[in-house]
Length: 144
Image 1 (cartoon, helix red, strand yellow):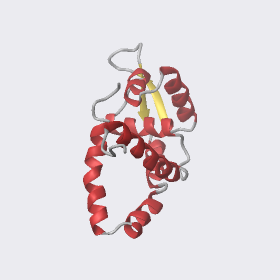
Image 2 (image 1 turned 30 degrees about the horizontal axis):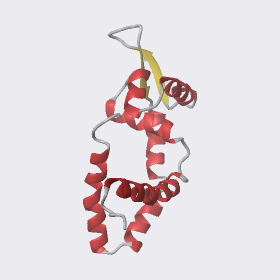
Image 3 (image 1 turned 120 degrees about the horizontal axis):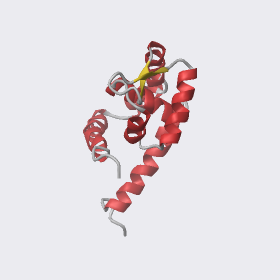
């Protein structure tokens, strides 16, 4: 019998538990994960270069360049020369981008709030609350 707390077994169980929840949560969103991630990052970090975005989001520079181009066409980000180094271009969130971010965040939120309220009892909600910091730590080490 496999130990359910063994790292490989636990990782597989976690992935399989999160996948359908993530799909359901994201089914209400209108932007891809990559584009939403770029908007979230710009909100938290301020204007960044495409290279910095690629590193933070752990996606290729080419993918970032394409996403930024599309986000700019949608009016959600702007590109301007870096005032400190005119050879670099900074990508920044626009006011329309901030508004879209609000709607992207709320997408799927009603389902999740309802599920947490109805499907879990008080002790299960407490266990879930205790797991959130642990889940955040799994990504705290940065790129691998």
